Image 1: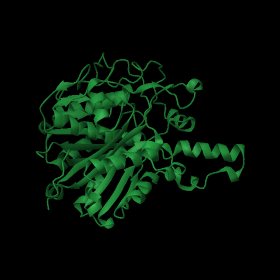
Image 2: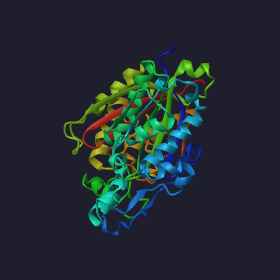
Image 3: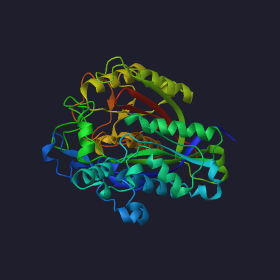
Length: 406
């Protein structure tokens, strides 16, 4: 069997589209899911906007017995995993449970569930605290619930590296497939749009305080002033390419390369080691800079961090050397769910020969010498994409994905 690892299934929950096709259609049109927070009154908070998933009806997608014991993020993950496996043709049905596993990323855990139960404890008494509190808040709960639901007894785990975690999880799942596991579910979901979750995000001081959805999150723009939070993400099915061909699976693309690094001064953007992560991903994929046809950037929306990322992309590809896009301007930054959704967008862009736009950006920063795709989607011809993700605290990850012939 080949050591190439491919994506055979994808499940998407995003603020601008529920399901893979709806998300991609909206993204190519530049349709944003960012608006004023509706899940609670944001009036007392300096950041009133978010990318909310508004069309997810829980009981349409999650078994009733699981509703009481799960946070919103886990409900998204359960639905995403179900859709990804269906998209892959339900290959798990013919595999030994030990030959299938799950590794996800989690940046927040079940914050909304935890907040509610802590309110019950404080305002009532311990008898009103759900017994499911013992695990529903935990970062690893998505992997656990997916594992139980689909009887995945192979490699299981979680990565907690904030925005970079989605790539880290996919990369580790790829390693497990290369080591012989027949099928891996991977990716990430986040849903921390509650007072507790928003307060934690505000503490990092990177959120935009603007109340206009079209001007709040502007990466690589002269008016950049932070990012907008969001919820959702993507779950992917990974398989060995040879085995996928044997069973006649449709292949979305290949996970070709991965690199990671850690910044010593993450809050300033100075001293970044992002270049090492990008170089590592290219080397792992067996490519040089000329082999990359589009970059899906991290796009922090903070001027200092944007300059640092643009400087690395300019070092690697040259000034304005390769098209760059930030489709998360239509969803907000989804934390652990962001990078898997960017990987999804990269695979679909390569498949369809079109780069989605960076929404709302109309005054590209002069000190960011990147060829930013703005306004409308841009046709292109390409075989490989680079996805960049940077997590708060200094985490950097980069991943190369390729279009395949099948």
